[in-house]
Amino acid sequence: MVRNIISIGLFSFFLLLITSSASGPDLSHRNQVKRIVIDAGHGGHDPGTRGKFSREKEIVLKIALELGSTIEKHLKDVEVIYTRDSDKFVDLDVRAEIANKSHADIFVSIHCNAFVRKDVYGTETYVLGTHKTKDNLEVAKRENSVILLEQDYEDKYEGFDPKSPESHILFELFQNAHLENSLDLAASIETQFKTRAGRRSRGVKQAGFWVLWRTSMPAVLVETGYLSNPAEEKDLNDQVQQSYIASAIFRAIRDYKQDMESSN
Image (cartoon, rainbow, N blue to C red; front, side):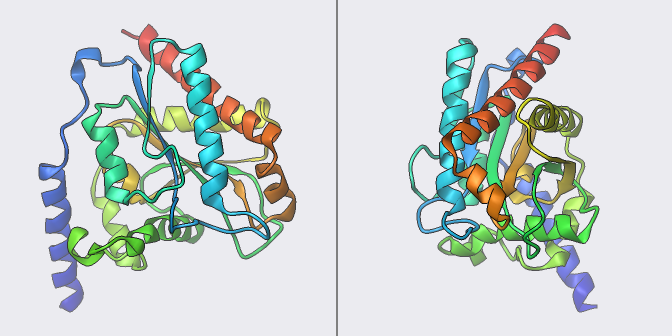
């Protein structure tokens, strides 16, 4: 009975968020990619996951800035917006709000991964969806736990508990209107990682990431590698490898943009 009451309460909360969320995408340039929001995960007092000698927040910021610079250099008609361009903390809901208010055409959130087994390595690109495996749920819970570092998170997120499987399961109740395009972009990113950047692709996955759910455009969350793997941590801190990763994401965005705009 208590579980049913909690589920109904959370369901009502999610419906309220849908109806009261920031304005949707600008339909005047549908199927065009003119504005991209790049989200470097974590920052400030939130270091993200840690390796033996490095922290996620610094690595992903470098990759994000490199990606934005490459887009601005080669895609002159595209505006790049960062959720953060320095070592500062940005609330999870604000990241999505930045994308929504700017009427972005793509949202790309960049992260590093971690696992208890140090032999696990490789890239993964997530879109919003059902947790297919327990591992996917654990990744979502870890990234969503940023909420706990925010002031007044209990009131702001109205009972959403990033540590609770029940809270994450409710993402399954909603269909992402941009899922197909998000999947296309995610698949292109993983292909570029594997064929052009020389990285091991662990594929496209789905999970309930709050920041993806709140965005009203095609959105992906890119896990660039595992800081828990010693060799990959070294790679992720190498400037050349960071450039390869940023370049792979750029090429995927470029190809996605061409495909979308050729269908107009």
